[in-house]
Length: 159
Length: 184
Image 1 (cartoon, rainbow over the protein chains, first blue to last red):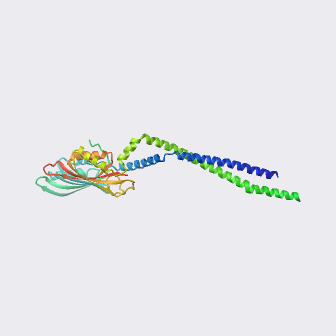
Image 2 (image 1 turned 180 degrees about the vertical axis):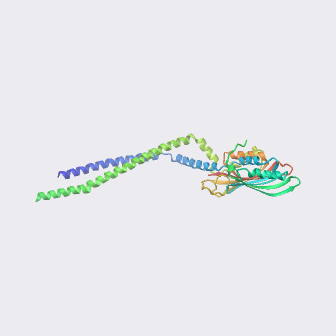
Image 3 (image 1 turned 60 degrees about the vertical axis):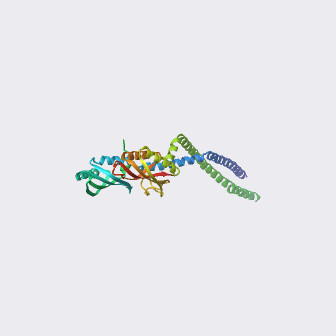
C-alpha cells in the first residue's frame, strides 16, 4: 500500500515539475519572440544590400583599368625620332592589343623603336608591317604590339 | 487467501502506476528539460546575433556618407542623364569636343575591367557600354582618361582609337573611346 501511495506521490511530483518546466519553456520562447520583433528588418536589409554592393565594388576596383599608366609607358618607350599619327588600343582575352601607324626619319630609327618595345617586360609581342618610303614623312610603318593587361592594372603616377 | 489476492492486486496497481504514469512522466520531464536546453541555446544565439546586429547598425549609421558614396559609384539604375552630364563636364574641362555619345547595354555576366563579354564571375550588376567620339589634343585625352579613372561613378575604358583629324593641325586628333560603366 505504501509503495502505491509513494508511486502516486512521485507521479504528482513529476506532474508539478513538468508544469513548471513547460512554463519556463514558454517564457524563454516568448523572450525570443520579443527579441525578434524588436529587430529593424528594413535596416538590416539595407545593411545586407550595402554589403553586397561593397563586395561588387571590391571586385570592380580590382579590375579597374588605368589607361594613363599605359600612355605613360608608351611615351617612355617611344623614341623621340618616331611619330605616331594613328593608334588603336583594345582589350581582348586578357591582353591589350595596340595597332600604331607611325613614321620615322630612317630605317635605323624604326629598328630602334622596335627594340625599345621588345625589351619591355610588359610587351609580349611586336610586329611590324607596311614599311615604305614616303616623300613627306620619311619611313612609314605599322606596328602591332601586344601588351600584358597588367599595364592597365597598375596605378602609376601620371604627373 | 484474500490477503494474498489484495497483495497481488496492490502489486499490480503499483506496477500499473509505475508503467503508465511514472515512466511516461519521467520521459516527459526529460524531453521538456531537453527542449529548455535547446531554447536556452537559441536564446543565447539570438542574443549574440542581436549584439552583432547592433554593432553593425551602429557602424552603418556612422558611415552613412560612405554608404551614399557607394551608390554613386554603383547606382541602382542606369542613370543615363547624370552620366551624360558627367561625360560632357569631363570632356569640356579637358578642352575636348564631345562629338557623339552612344549607349548600349551589355549582356549580363560581364566582369569589371573594361573587357566585354568576359565571364570570369557571375556578378549581380549590369554593364553599360558608352561609345564616345571626341576631338582635341593628346594631352587633353590623357587628362580626360585620368579624370574618368578617378570619376566617382566607376568607368573602365575598353578601347581607344585615334588619328589626326586633318593635315593642317596635326596636334588635333579624333578619338573614339569605348567605356564600360556599371549599375545594380
